[in-house]
Length: 127
Image (cartoon, rainbow, N blue to C red; front, side):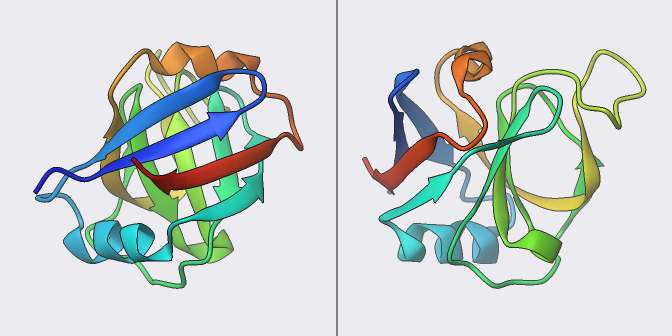
């Protein structure tokens, strides 16, 4: 079964995220089961992250990610969506602040996330 998440904000409209079944399945399942919820956007370089009602530790974590990757950051219970360089980047690719559980991929152009403002309300639900 293909599972998709729908993220809606005033500034970008709707963005879809595909949960990848073979990447950190416990994390993907926990995020899916927590839907729907609302949160507020935080910005760190070219990454949008926000609190979610999931409380897990590290699964098969990593710090190196790609544009469009979606991950869970255990220390702050946040979903992270990477759309470009972050302050931790050592190249043109995004890099997480600390290890994250990669579990999904943006299905369109992740660069539209540049329009999201800090504190903007996000609605996250099953698509």
